[in-house]
Length: 308
Image (tube, rainbow, N blue to C red; front, side, top):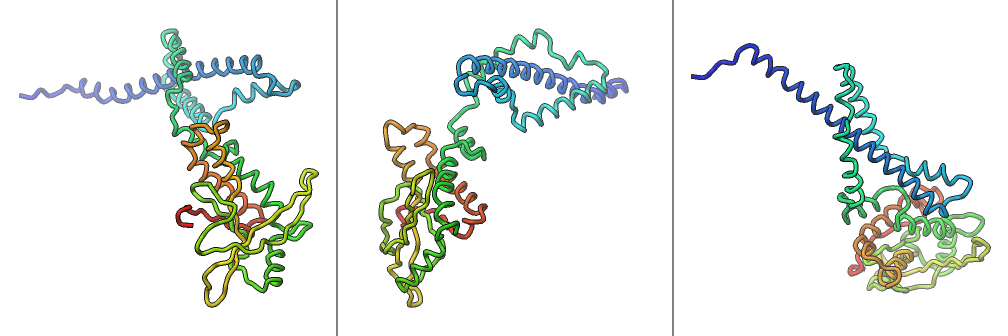
C-alpha cells in the first residue's frame, strides 16, 4: 500500500526547489568572484611584465597609462556578464539579507592558480580560434590589412575624378578613340580562389587589348603610374564585341607568394588561406561600396581558377 505524504512533507518539497535554486545562484556568484579575482591578478601581472620587458613598444610619456588601459580593457560580453552577475548578487542579498553566502572563502580562493594554469595552457584554443579572429571586424588581421592597403593605396587614388582623369573618363576616351564599347563601366577585379593571377588573364572568352591611358599621381613624393588592363570578349553579343577593364587582385598574388616562400610562410597562413581570401573580398567590397567615390567604379568578381 502506497504511503501518503504528510502535509509537512509536501510543504518541504514545495520549498525545496527554490532553496536549491538560490544555493545554485549563490555558488555561481561565488565561483565568478574567484574567477574575477584570478583574472584581475593576472592582468596586474601582465601590466608589470609588459612595462618591464616590452616597454620599448610604447611612448615614454604615456607608457604606464597605455599599458594599464590595454591590460584592463574588457570585451563587451564580459562587461554584460559582470553587470548581470552583479545584479543577481544584489537580488540575492536583497532577498536573504546575508552577504556571506555570496563571498568566497579561503577554501575557494586556493583554486585561483587553476585559472592561471588553464589560461597558460590555452585549453580553449584551437585552429578554429584563428578563423573566428579573422572573421571579426577589428582591422588587425592579414586580410583586412591587404584590403585596406589595396583600397587606399590604389583604388581610391586611381578610379575617382579627383584632380586627374578618372576611370569613367578614360573609358569614354578609349571608346571614342578605338571605336569600341565597354560591356561594364567599371573596373573588374578578379579574386580567384587559388589566389594566383598570371600577368595576362587567360581564358577562351577573353583576349588582351590595348590598356587604358596611363595616369601619374603623386603619392608620398613619388610620381606613381597607374594602369588598367583591357580585354575584349572573343564572342559577340547581339553583333557587338564588348570590352572589359579587368585585372587581378595583386594583394592576393602577393599572399600566394608569401605562402610559398619559406621565410614568410607559416602553417597558420596555409591553414587559414580560405578564411583570408574570403575576408579580403568582404572587406574590400565593404570599403569600395561604402566610399562614395568608388561605389560605382569597382566590380569584385570571385572566380574559381579552373572555370576562368
